[in-house]
Length: 402
Ligand code: FES
Ligand SMILES: [Fe+2]
Image (cartoon, rainbow, N blue to C red):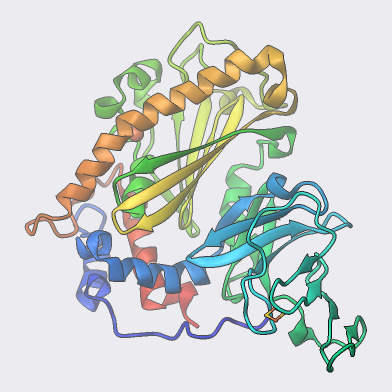
């Protein structure tokens, strides 16, 4: 596809100045992270949207939202209006939500069974594969243009996309590394969990009064559990909780779950749900977390997996979208309803505990004395890795160079 124009490099933002990058090159214990402006300046968020999110692979939505052929779902990714659709052959694609004629927004509402898409302005019609189907009166009154006379530039603008299990990712500028390369470390880390055996059961958004990066960092922070989540802390083997370790663009950690609980639940009476098939005893006792760079977290348990996507609403507000997946039969079965609800309630409690801390992190970024902070070598190596990549993205360097 043709790269989107206008992603040229601009003057460097002070939050990613050379001196900031230098501060990140020291060892973890001596390094400094991104300064306050990266979390408080609306202009920095615009640069992230324009450069980093447009050049990286980013999560677009669950494919199950358009599972049926003819389904159309509107999306906003990195400030761009897109839509996702599945055609009659079952192929899912993502397009820019714009008509190639005079640029009207094409789709306003999600649809269940569209056979084609017709632009409301001059009636150009498109197949769900993006092809032009017809142009009424294109050559003059009653001189219609039919299939077969079109050029590629008359078709919808497709966005480069890839699917991993139920998760559709897009690369807006079309120039990121191959998706398989980008995800290689995640494939390796999670090859033992058969996500194909799960089904989407529940979706829930949570709102945080903090910059999206602080919410990501908090979710990747195993260090705070003993202070912020005391019940969870007591339910885990506290001596086997790890800090984040970088892996490719992403970062990974895990904690050992308590003997009784197979989920996050701290209630030993909670109903037991079916588990991932063929998990080794070691994997059955562990809960891996990761940040799929830039703004997705996977939280994996023996009985379910959650995908979190952190959507920046403004520089100091984030919606965390959460999709809950349980084993196929447990995703909808009445017999497992109580188990599902226990898991969902656990996460609501956990997020409520994190909400106040995320607000405090944001508030702390208004203090002049704090610039980049201090990192714990054991816990915070992943966060430093995250900051470096944000800086690379906003500066247009490394894998973001174009
Ligand atoms: S703008 Fe869509 S048909 Fe003219
Ligand atoms: Fe937390």
